[in-house]
Length: 267
Image (tube, rainbow, N blue to C red):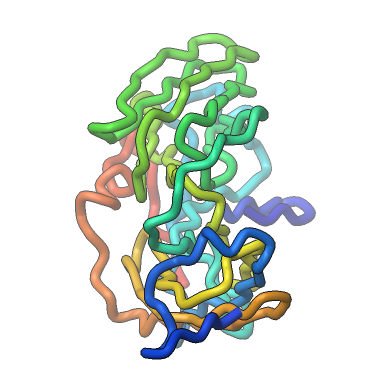
């Protein structure tokens, strides 16, 4: 999300075998690691944003007075970089202990922040209600199912993520425009693209890897990349913009919370 002056805007290496390079990730290489860096792009312009009217909840309306809040499903930079794309290596990789610190999500100004985040299997997810209104935290998931009420400002919900999942959608049933996506991985080889569409995955075992990118509107793309020890391999993903979104993935974004909850922005 980007914040500007009032009216503010919240937008929202290669291991050789006799028969050639191995297709399997080579975790046994230990310190023989490299880096994957790349770019996720969107050809052509981004679709129009959706302006969220907070009038369905007076407290949300007061918290965002003077701001123009948009539903940032697609965030494209001037040179075509696509933000909020989840990039990960496909295994198998051996499971490793998750970080002790939690992955954090905030319910702030009646929006989930961040919109897309990666976490580890077994890691604790922590969701804080920073608003002076009631929220809840409801996962659309069969492997990491939860539904918890957060009626008071400052409340914190914690949940230990139990199983791998790409992607888990979390919503607030009280405010239908509120949604975030969490990817749960048993390995650390993932990243979320930044506002310019770039990403970096460090300490990747040397070898040939399959890399996949996921975007909530445009779905998945897959590439193969060879990583050499001590070197950086590059990979590019490019969406045409013609990919059709799943209605299931986007249904929370098109169901208003009230008579004036959502309005499609002109231009």
